[in-house]
Image (cartoon, protein in one colour):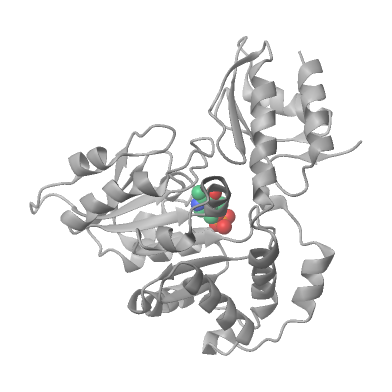
Amino acid sequence: MKQINLISDTITKPTKDMLDYMYAAEVGDDVFAEDPTVNRLQEKVAQMFGKEAALYCPSGTMTNQIAIKVNTQPLDEMICDHYSHVYQYETGGYAFNSGVAVNLIRGEYGKITAHQVEAAIKPVYDWLPITKLVVLENSCNKGGGSYYTIDEIKPIKQVCDTNNLTLHLDGARLFNVLVETGENPKDIGAQFETISICISKGLGAPVGSLLIGPQDKIREARRFRKVMGGGMRQAGYLAAACEYALENNITRLKQDNDRAKILGAEVKELPYIQSVFPVHTNIVIFELGNGLQSGEVVEKLKSKGINCAAFGATMIRFVTHMHIGDQEVNEVIQIMKSLY
Ligand SMILES: *Cc1c(COP(=O)(O)O)cnc(C)c1O
């Protein structure tokens, strides 16, 4: 039976061309900052976002965790939406690695407003954590791939500047946003102190994320990457895959977004579907109706060759990516139609 994997865009595998490019990489020891391919990737990404420096790390969890660490002191607090990856899916690392508290905001599909941020800032008392960091996620995974435009980010940045708060972007799927809005990465760079991007999701590299920011913070970030065990040696083979992905795989993300929109529109019409989150990028989250539980529906889809993720008791997530073409989209629609 043919398998169609909609679990995540992290399942994407290197293509032959990417593997050829990786095979030809020039490498050195990156713990000594002597891997020419890693250095070139870091410079390329820093430049792309108009920032001073960047650091190649094994995962987006690590780049986010290092960002929280370099932007806070213990007993500080970070503000984020309750759907945020940094809160939901990083094992509580903000507390473990940085000793900070979290101040959760209930946004709309994972998006918070400047007004909400302003209202959440704590006054300074001995018995309160000091509000220091704001984390935005763009696109927002648990919000169904929703996104902020730069015009929506600017007022949040303004509140941060006025109140001495630092702004970090979890941009794991930022390029899925930029192919929709046509915005320039440099204009994104100007809004944030630090930015994390993942190359191992829709962009198709096997491993790697980058933390982007000012020179002094990235210098400190190198130390935290080391203590977390993320200092790699001949990492240039992996960095080469990221370089290849950034050169060749950005514009095609628009196809993933478009296919997700088609899937979302079709799923919405099914009698056993209660609702679908608005589809903006490559994620489709839907709520089951008719008393159906996500566990049983995920199992039933699996028996028909479709892999996807349960998102809570009654919701399911589909993620489109480079291994899902028009034919796969059509097959998923046909199977969904025949399911109940
Ligand atoms: C995937 C993801 C990350 C990082 O994930 P890793 O698997 O650690 O690379 C961070 N934030 C968001 C929103 C993500 O979707």
